Picture 1 (cartoon, rainbow, N blue to C red):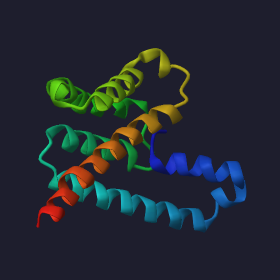
Picture 2: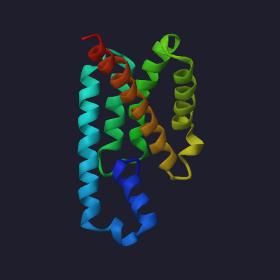
Picture 3: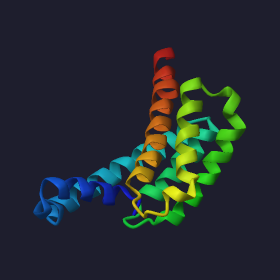
Picture 4: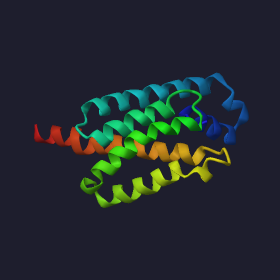
Length: 146
């Protein structure tokens, strides 16, 4: 399971199995999902970058549903194609980071053990990197100019 709900449940379960099954977990999970969805919606609409928009949208399709199995990683093909298309225009750190993350996501032997925590973290990393880039380089930059 690649969802944010699954990652959050595993974190809660490590500290307290009872807390992971409580109503407080459900409330925290719902609030987190709403915040992530709102941030994704605003940044995806605001950005002019096709890579950012594709990465954010694909990440949400993978991370928001309560249950999302490994086959949803197919949605990362769209941002991967956009990554290849815009590779020459990206900063070096993003070129290297995304290359490693996409190679990991699409390397089949890493899917075989059926432990998708690292895959989830790879998708979350792409999501956070793109949202942070849109907020920093587009939204805040525009506010400073105004």
